[in-house]
Length: 137
Image (cartoon, rainbow, N blue to C red; front, side, top):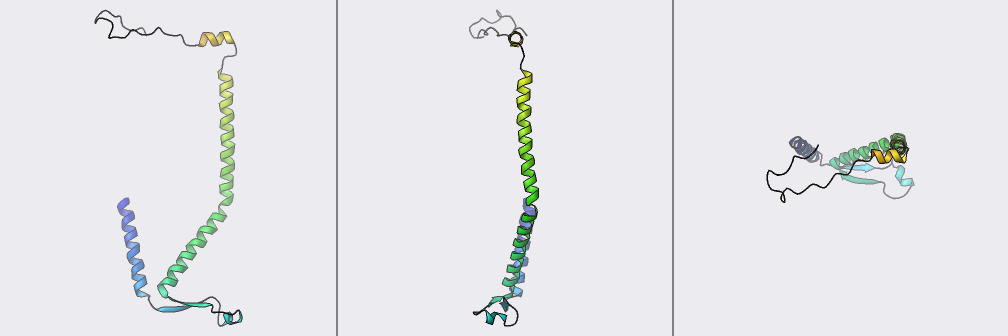
């Protein structure tokens, strides 16, 4: 997978360099059509290489698409956030219910249900080999 990604990046770089070398002519990029900029004052055009105009148009189109999708999916993100909050609240409520219903209702039953304390085991190093009984199950 890593090789495939590297191959794609190298191929894309070669294509972009080829497009840039083939389109080095300088073009005039105007902000307004046919001398409309003269009424606003100033120079509303710039001279750039054609490949730069193409790359900037592509980058601005990608940025516009990213913003468009981000705005379009805002309701989906909001609903997901609401559902996540609701699920967390329900999980907390289930946890509290489990704690409340799992506990014995009577103190005597709680004492009876408590595990019995086992006697501490004698370390094997202090007993002679063959003199100890197997551990109880």
